[in-house]
Length: 137
Image 1 (cartoon, rainbow, N blue to C red):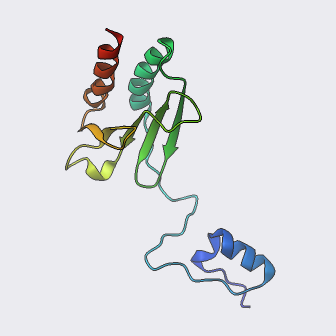
Image 2: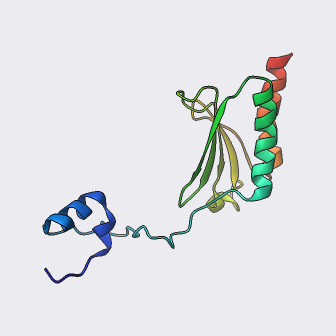
Image 3: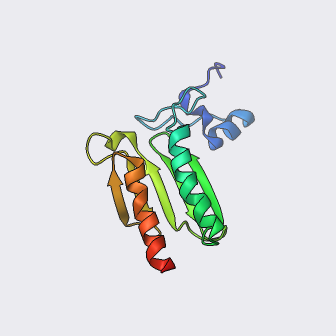
């Protein structure tokens, strides 16, 4: 063994193989190695403020109880749950690759249907507010 580690060495199976001294499997073609420098998409402070304003209102009304934030290499996702053990009621996604086409922001329902998509987060989030108002009346 030459002591060099190829870029596929960060895979769990390859780490185990490396520890045992076994040969490593090569990384798939076109795969980027995961490093600390890999950029992730994230919500900024203003975007989180808009989302949490609606989330706080719904928690106070007793409709929602939990949330999760995922920062992925291609998009950021804010998932809203009625209960922790369920699938999310809504997902608010930020996908910068779609910014010039359909808009970077989208609200996705529990079924996977896209409820609203656009370039302004406040306008996209109104679809959640409207659905809550119709249920409250």
